[in-house]
Length: 175
Image: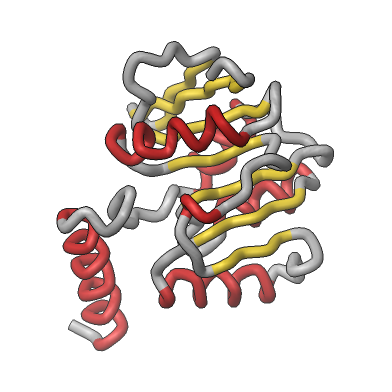
C-alpha cells in the first residue's frame, strides 16, 4: 500500500474517532460531485445565493455552487488537512474571489446572511445545529441535507440519488 493511500486511510480513521468521541458533528466522507450538484439543484441555488457549507471538507460543494450556479460560497472545516485541501482546490479553480473557507467550528459561524446551508452531518449533528439555524437564518433560507433528515421536521422537498435521500427544508423565524 502506497504512502498516499495509507495517509488517506489514517486521516479518515482519525476523523471517525473524533466523531465517536463527540468532538465532531459528523465523520468526514466527501459528498460525491454528482450528489453535490443535485443538492444544489434541489435547493434552487442561483447567482443571488450565498451558500454556506458547515463542514465543507475539500470545498467541492462550494466549488460546484460557484461554477454551475454563479453563487458565492462560504465554508468552515475543523480538520486542518481537509481545510488545506479545500484552499488548494479553490485556488486551482480560480474561485478565491467568490468562495471563502475558514478553519473554525460550525457553531462559530454567523448564518444571518446565508440563503442556502448545505449539510452532510448525521441526524444527531443536524439536531445539534437546529437551534442555531432557527435563530440565525433569515426568512426563506433553505437547508439541504445529504442522507440525514432533521427529526420531527417535515422537509419541503426531497430527492433521491443513488438510493440516498436528500432533504430540503425552508426556514423562517418559526423554524
